[in-house]
Image (cartoon, rainbow, N blue to C red):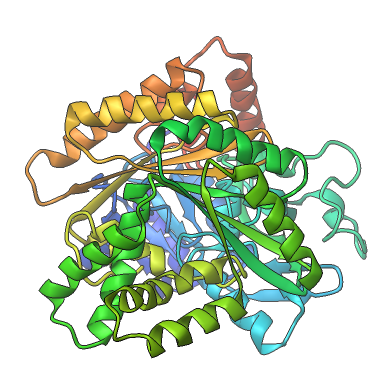
Length: 538
């Protein structure tokens, strides 16, 4: 790539999108250079376009001036780089101003949105218009971008997000605009409902790629059902974990459950639930220091399981009981099974409040308040509840918001392998995590999400304190070691941190990556779009 002429590009970009949306001041760039993962990287500027046409002009100027661009939808890629580019001194293209909801079709169950549209924005739109549809929400935050998360292949509470993408509009690195599926045919009635279109299906080329900038897409929604419920399973003994996973796999393969089971170890559950308990206790007037201790104690007494699983149900009123009964039957002797509905939540809240003179009832009342936002996700309601789990291991009780998360003292890194949905594989991964984390004295926070009847997406959190000298480097070394261990066992991570792209894409003899390089040269001959992102070294 030729030497970038950033100064000339910035001057032209100011004419295209307005000087107020071309950020170059040190304090403005500092907001974008902060990252939850602790990585430090300089950026050359930030552009905030508001239309596909503006993005097209930005790309044309970047091509002429040889300036690398790094697009972000909302920049909530926490633990994997946040808004930071893979290559230093890139110019970030922040698509947050492109936040229009073009259409929500409740009959055909889709929403056509721009990349700045968040989970909360679409949820409020659906509620305001009383539409009989719901979203496949993720546990990230209310401010998470719908398109950004789908392009990164996140997993929602019901299914993989990537499966929802359709009719994607992309500004390619060569300056052309392309729409996938049937979307490029004027007046096509199936553009938003049939992702493959006619001819080669290229929609998937723009997921985890750096071929262009996605400026619009259709996100498929779910029809509202008569009944929402959640099945909650608690596995007391860790040595039964393999059988537990196999039983859950059979439930999915046999069609008893059709959504993504979310499986977490005790420590992961603890850092999720304790902050919600803390908020409840603070609301009751308890001193913060005491509330931290009390939250931990309530969790210890009310959540004894080594592993837990939540299975969302979307069904008819008559369909809930047979499913719950079958789950209970198959997990008998393995795990304790409960089911939760709106009615049961209300009844439990009233009963535990009325019996609040008993310490056990006060604890249960607090737990019901703590799990309410997580139960809401099983109904398609986005929440920020999971954000507090980031700070809890480092600063229990510290206030957390999505806007300030990157600048906090808590650091977070992820390893995200995909494994077969088999008990023996889940046990092997658990062993690898514990072995590597024990060597570095970090606590393993483990989630396993059912991507399908055959595969588990695993989310391994590494929490650390940014304030400790050398801790960020030690945390990164630990995650790299786990990354290598997963690769050696055939558990390939499906997403990577911006510093770890080379760990996945370094084999020059792999014809897959050779082909990706050739496609990159076709779609982005100047190599200006997110250089290094899911791309083998040049």
